[in-house]
Image (cartoon, rainbow over all chains, first blue to last red; front, top):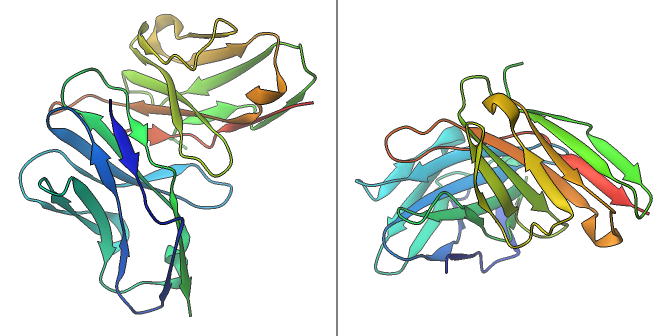
Length: 114
Length: 115
């Protein structure tokens, strides 16, 4: 069965500091991995995805994520946080085989203080 | 606006009533997904369509829930005999399959409150 774990309910970081939001997954075979962000009263917005190839994936708004197959992780990172990055972040996984059902994590709230 | 739209944005109903939600996907997208999201949780997969065919349904989708996508365009999600446990945000997403996978783009959601 597919699953996603986001071990931190909330991450606090000072503006200008690097940030990391953690995600680990479980899936049979190779994964497709995604990060989405949700701002208050708005729908989920796609940030980036990993399909294959380079383990470091770059996405929107300066975010990037690193795929680590041995650790089954796909952590979201940004070198320098902005106050406007404060939002709810979701990691999601889908198996390469077995249909298009996508499993989302419970979310991590990022709080960036000025 | 060419994004995914959902109607209504909010729905308050009494227990036992039927409700129907509509989703209009991005026009060239052939896949459409429905999710349910409760407070403090990520979206839970309900069902998805490729064109007009409903290809997968979650076990969360009881027989009170039905979804359709006539002609492969807009989709409707109906909940019959609503229960208080149905209160949630219902999200729709659409995508275009390319390169072996797709990226889902979400609508703003319909918030359902069952009294």
